[in-house]
Image (tube, rainbow, N blue to C red):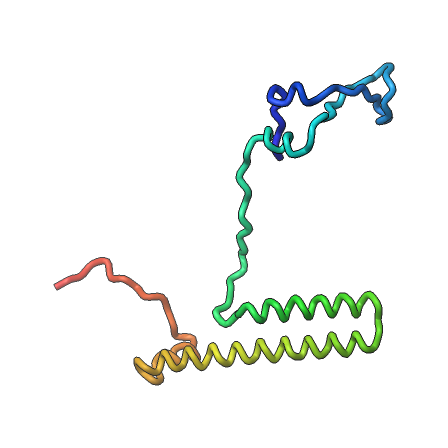
Length: 149
């Protein structure tokens, strides 16, 4: 949270007495709150700059995901929420149709990604990479640190 530098905008604020019941009468237990006389833009200019945090996802992304799937997912979620609010039969059909198209799109992209991977792997050796992947025998490349004669 950013804090305001009161000295920078001293002329633009005034103190207003408030009591603990949050009305503007004075009296015992009176506290003061700063009220800005100027526009919020000038107050924003006088606030210190802070850095914003970028969102980092801890989930691993998949290689077959495309932007069109993101749009389809958003449409499916919107249709689902609309159906859940109203419970109308025509909206249920629309939701189920959008969901079916989304699932078909995922299957299609996964299949295309697999075919592309197999085409790249077969240019080197037709069965080595596919077999190792299927059998679970893939491992990270190890670098030899010492060599003996």
